[in-house]
Each structure stands twice: as structure tokens, then as C-alpha cells.
Length: 112
Length: 113
Image 1: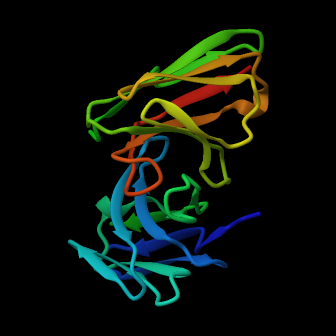
Image 2: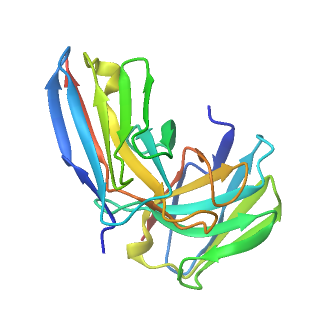
């Protein structure tokens, strides 16, 4: 069964627009990670969130984790073509058990 | 460059062949992972090695056989695969198993004919 739900599955935006990607779990997560993947390549780490209510930013990307640690959002401000790719959320289901799970990803295309 | 390399990048093999995938990390990490990524499915964790010891086998068929001779190298030996095993196989490493961000290699695109 799908344990991390990502939405939307795909997104096409005009350059300069803001966008948000969501990641939802039915259970409390120990840690939440955001990665970016270029098609057919490996994942590049973006951010890690561990505390309920935590928010982190890097350049134009902001990630948040809700208080219950079951939902996270990734927000991109003023999108650029370089932001295009597949965004995946991943999570530790519990501490120290190697039970890593991932969402199916959100494919982002940014039109110049 | 993430510090994790994988070879080969592409592999086509018949169902009766035997081949191996190789992963190497130069980050001083103690944990290494194999993942399978198929179209429209979540990334699936296959195996985890922590300090060279296998700590996770996620119900993977025996036609996939991992080997971790040291903390820097990880292999995935393949034999008598099925067409549904065609996928992108990703290797990752982390400082400690079970926590923290993982560093991923570029993957091996495997096609089973």
C-alpha cells in the first residue's frame, strides 16, 4: 500500500510562478526528506525536517513539516527552468530501523 | 557529483545471464543501500548494509544477491532475472544506517530481455 502520498503527480508552470508540492502520510514520521531527481539519474538531497512545525529554506525552496509530523509541503518561489525535475519526499518510518519509504514523486516542468 | 559512483550506467541482459552492479562511495559513510525504481512506483528499498553487515532485506527475490566487502563498496549480483526486473537501480550511502540524509549514485538502467 502507498504510505507516502505526493500531490500533484505532475505540474507545469510558467517561469516566475510559485508552486507547492505536498507529501502526506497516514502515520507519524520520524524524519522527512525532500530530494530532487533529474530523469533517469540519482536523487539530490534538498532538505531534512525532523521536528513538528519545522521549516527550512534554501535559495528559493522552502519545506515545512506539520506539527503532527504527517504532512510536508515544498514551496518554490519564482520558479526557474533549473527547478524542473522530479521531486520526491522520503521518510524514516521510525528511528534506527532502516525503514525508509518514498513517495511516487512530482514531475515539475517550468516553461520559459 | 554526490561522491557515490555506480557502474555500469546502462545494462542490457538476457534472462539467463549473470551480471553484477557495482557501487562505490568516497564519503567515509558506514551504511549503503540498494533501491529499485520502476516507472510510476515509489522507490523501493531492497537491501541495507550497516558496517558491512546486512541489516535489511526487504523481501527481495533470491535472484538478486548483494555483497558488501567493505564499507566503501557494494555489489548487486544478478542472475536469471525476469523482464519485470527492468528498472533503474540506485545505490545510496549515509553516515549511519537508519538515520540522516542519503547520498545517491546516478543509477544503473537495467533492461532484461
